[in-house]
Amino acid sequence: MSIQNRRELLFVYDVKNANPNGDPSDENKPRMDEETGLNIVTDVRLKRTVRDYLFTSLGHNPDNNKDIFVRTTESKKGKGIKDGKARGLDFGKKKDEMLTNILSKCIDIRLFGGVLPLDKDSIIFTGPVQFKMANSLHKVEMKYIKGTGAFASKDGANQQTFREEYILPYSLIVFYGIVNENAAKATGLTDSDVEELKLAMWDGTKNLISRSKFEHNPKLLLEIKYKEKNFFIGELDKYISFDTELQDEKIRDIEDGQLNISKLGDVIKRYSDKIDSIEIKKNPRTILTGFDDIDYKEV
Image 1 (cartoon, rainbow, N blue to C red):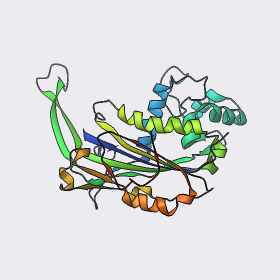
Image 2: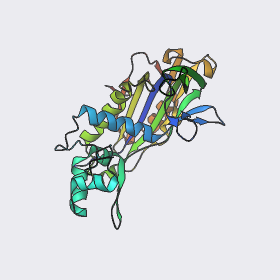
Image 3: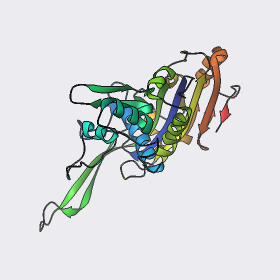
């Protein structure tokens, strides 16, 4: 059975000496809002984190209901990778068969939806889970780093190549998302799928252990589940702030301040009759203020 309750998610993580989300159209620099000085991270980046973690942690077994549709697969032509149409054919030759199998087998489509191009038309899945583009809770500083590579530019040359990159010394990032129970009916999103999503957001971020993504650390995951149909508070990311005595660009650690969610606490009290439950997962080093008199479950 698909989920019956609407949910809102607030996810906070930090990044140290890394590039949270490079812009390929701008030398792969960290994405920035030039007006505010805030770091920006796209929802696509978070969805990729979720997909990659689920693909690895669930054993990427195409015979269960936790396969990942949007992933690189080898073309049956013997070289290169499949396009969307060829990937769809892995799940059936006819449109109805393809539709049924993709939704029953692929957790990422049940979560995020997708577009599957066909010869004459396309199959469009509207995702029940949608995230806003994220931003940092403070102004950030971008640094340019240049280093020496291990190899020459060509065989026999005396000069080694140079490596150039842009990083952020620190960025504390907040994502806001909604899980829509109405759209869930179309994709068959289940409560179990949502639990897998939350696990992948937390552990997937923690396991971004590549050179460019090392030092991504989850700090807070808050879920509000509603009992009144179609109701939600909205814009949860606007009710959170990072209180610190430091200049924004000098922040280097979560312990340099406190996550203040007192405004969120106030609005939750206002709509408490519409809320079924609240769950919070918190990193031990995260200091959370303004939520002491709110009834929630810590997981």
